[in-house]
Length: 621
Image (cartoon, rainbow, N blue to C red; front, side, top):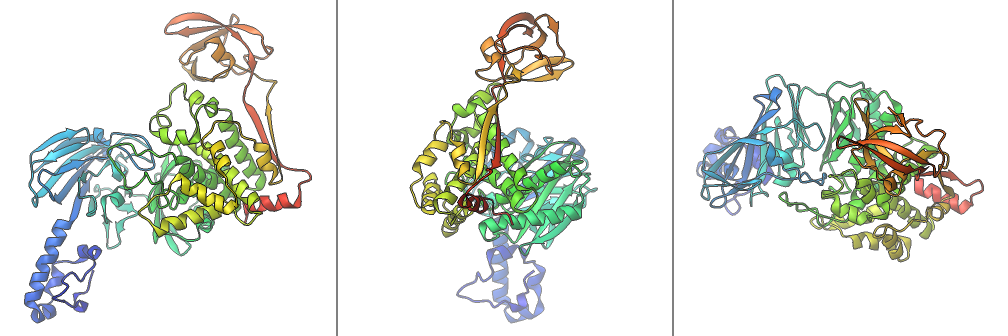
């Protein structure tokens, strides 16, 4: 609330209160007798100006939950039309999740105080004129449990704002306000943009900020802790077995270790919304908050708990990497179509790299455990046939049509920009350390790029910005490195990279294990093929995804566990299958499991220089 006793009215400049403060002024404040008697004429004019500005400058929503048990919320949008026949639209995708999700499919009961016509799959044109007050209301059905979408039931509501609040085209830069009316049984509202003076109101300076702020409504637990002088609030949704005191301590620890990478914290408050479900894991970053998902009973399982801390590190790292430092193509957002970039390998892959490196730096895992995580990622990437087909830059660009829309052949044609991107980060970190003679590491690259963002926040970075900054730190042209690991599918010389850090890299094939090269699922006692890996016994023998495996050389099978014991390499078997309801017999020539087993261990006699490089790389506190 602004105290008008301290306000001085000036004829030359009537707008003397900051725009963001306008919404805090009430009619009653203008009726203070002292001011009214002193400057009646000026005050009445100023009051009229303020109220008119308030009414016209903000787009407001009322969010309510008349039937949460049926997964519905009601949204009423109100705004002043800034053009004739204004257009209202619903985004088709959520930033941070690169898939067109068609959020308008969840809308129903659409109404307006003006005639409306649907002109696109996600847009409506209203028969209103400039200056008229528009009301646009609708129901949202929300019954998808994920960190990217809204979910509503009798217990609570997780509101993914980007799939809930429509935009007024051309008015996205106006202030947006959401007034939340919780269901009668709900007491709390959590949001990174909550109004501190009204805990049931969300205030955003523009539409981008509004839809980047998820809202949790219900009766969740809350705890807070201070990290780097900033209050962090954790909203724990649903029953769980977490030790809140330990969780607060460990989250603070990983957060403060993360902040050291960047040198500063760009927010004044931060919110974690943790959805505790029967099973599942995931997270989605936002500008000053995140939504995390955790299996409710896994906090007591140490490995699962550490993985949750890693997830915290990942989404928190995004505070800088992608939410501020961002690719040129991702902002300002176009919510109606895909926003392609070749740089997800950097913004997601490098973040995935740091979420595990920070576990080691903060002391949650030792060096052996960290190196195991590094090798697990390399195995997962290099043992996927798609690594020879798709570059990591291509994987980034095609996320919209491939990464989020996998099929039974995806393992043969695609890679993860998370996994391969983390490998690029690992090798670039080692390269910068080596070439700079331990003066710099990847932290310095992130800080250089972040400084570039701060110098021009409106402009995103390009691939060349990343390459140029890395070249400068390394003191040499790294074009061949980037061409090889980012824009090529050629094999990588891992042993040489790790040797410079005093580590021995080994890759071996398991020649004792016969494998068809398939993944399967068992449904009602039936073994069904999910996928067939390229250049394996199954691939060469013609096994298809969807086939039911019923017998090997005349012996019926109910599991593949131990099914090939006693068989040898190049032995021919007869495999009975059911395909499309018809029994067939395939002749399969057996082969070994093609996957490589990778190990990474300190060299027995490593040079002092290599040990120094490893210390600079890992930087354990």
